[in-house]
Image (cartoon, rainbow, N blue to C red; front, side):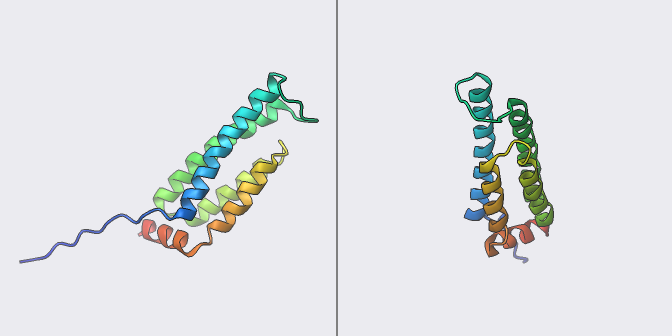
Length: 122
């Protein structure tokens, strides 16, 4: 008689959850800021609502790509998306985007995050 061992899917580490939630939060912040600036309820010097809207759209695309790369175990692509997200924040001068991308990039070096991506890649 043969024994069957079931392999359970690896749990998402807390650091990876923090990255994903912060990127989702960044999307909502960008759209909220776009609404506030475009409706005139918030005055920010040199804030162009079009740049904010384009940046929010890029944040959505980046979030979808991050989820896909995490599900496929592609850590280098995941990090590249975070770097692109940092660069995409430049035209809108999105300080929150810079901060979130910087600490998210740092969190990708956490041992449990590396282990999760390694397990997903197999």
